[in-house]
Length: 338
Image (tube, rainbow, N blue to C red; front, side):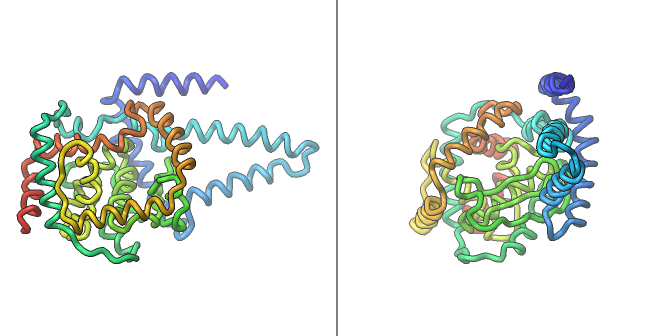
């Protein structure tokens, strides 16, 4: 029990030392764990390493209490100890990533509040680009081909930006359709094994962003806003027209909540269909419950906006495009139909 307050103290201290966390953990420990996780992922294929390890843990606990006069009590006590130890392993395996400097800070880009005029200009550009970039998506895309192409796009972006210290080529596992999307969640990254799971019930036009988002988590970017930013920029730079459209399609509503984004009727129809697909699967009470829990989890891990961190990506994109004219030029080229 002494380890619990010590654990909390170490995490609290880490919050005020992002530079130390980045140099020791981000560039030292986590890349090692990432490489081990990638190897474990290959060895466990097609099984899930997380589920396989959980099964082995429960089987081992059950085996250890056989023949004991009070097996249920002994099992419960040993299970409690195992849960505590697994909880202590969370920061080391992945959780310390929350205390690393954000992507914009690492790239030396200021996150000063954007001017309204700048947001409006980007909103107009974004609307023109998405109208030009629109492509017809198949109702049932090849998930594994999509995963391969998104993986290449994310790795290319991280390497180009020098953010690839823990980046590994990793596949995404696709859950049975609707398992997570019932609560409004498109995917999850398991912290202890950094394996990514995605629910294919999400609209096909959003699916590439969901995959890229989880791959950003796998590379050690824990904040939801950072994972969204990496997903957008990686797909924007992709040579594949469908991935570029997916990036713009996902970002447009977030910008549209703040400034006018003028969309063509075909794009508006795509958005209506995506929302309708979501509403068919989602259960409001489940979504509200899971969001409340996750909001508390994020705030406990130094993400002050909590669940709203997902939507911060609009301002991150604005800051990135203002500081990086090459990516703004890409967006302008798409808007021009090039």
